[in-house]
Amino acid sequence: MKAFQTIMILALLSLSQLALATEGVLIVSKSTNLSSQQITTSKIYLTDSKLQISNSGQDNSSMIFDANKEVFTFIDNKKREYYQFDKPTLVQLKEQLKMMVQVMKQFASQMPEEQQKKLDMILNPSNGAIIKYKETGTGKVGNWNTKQFQGTNENEKVLELNIASFETLGIEAEKFNAMKQLIDFFTENLQEVATMLPTSQSMSAISFDENSPILKEGFPVKTRTYAEGSSKSETIIQSITETGIAESQFSIPSGYARKTINMQQQFQK
Image (cartoon, rainbow, N blue to C red):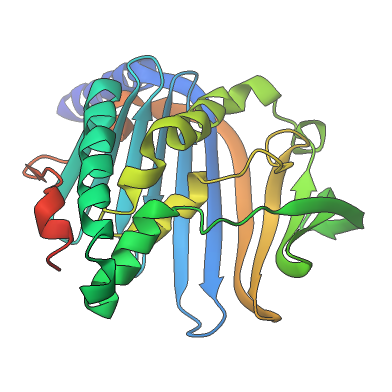
């Protein structure tokens, strides 16, 4: 009898968890730094209005975006800390940043090299890169047929993309709306401020220029980056599946401390 009761309780708990889950998309990818051979596994959880990106490996961070509330959260799992921004906060930070940068520009030549680099990153968050894309052919990645694109900056190859159409993936384009909204939010509000976060390189996952075919032609299932003629990194999608996603997936882990960006400290590092 006790065994039966236990089974019933477990079944009810499972059903309650399913009831709290929202239909969404789970994307699992593996990225390799081709210089160090360090591997990072990433998972992207997508629902109609929310997105979470979690990275394992050296870049042990997460990002959460609530499209309805326009709230972005960056989580540093190594330090058990998080930064959270709504749109008004970002507007205020950007204004403070502009004022600080104008002051710092007057003393740029006297700054240590590291501070000069920090200032340059803030002034030019995209490094001034204008990437031109052209379709170069077709290819196959795993079971997906793809279109191949090459991105160049000043005639130098910087990017190769293999993009599978939404039809090929078997997932409707509308399922990626939260990701599109995050990319727009990043471009309009977050780009400069993102350079001040602990692992700003993880922002590359949501930093696309307006010319990019990503989410227009489909979703990239293989990405290679290049610099000075050499391959630097490779990201390959392991799986894209429609699944139920629990609301708790978009929660900040308990015990994590909220941090704020201190403009003055940024230039003292």
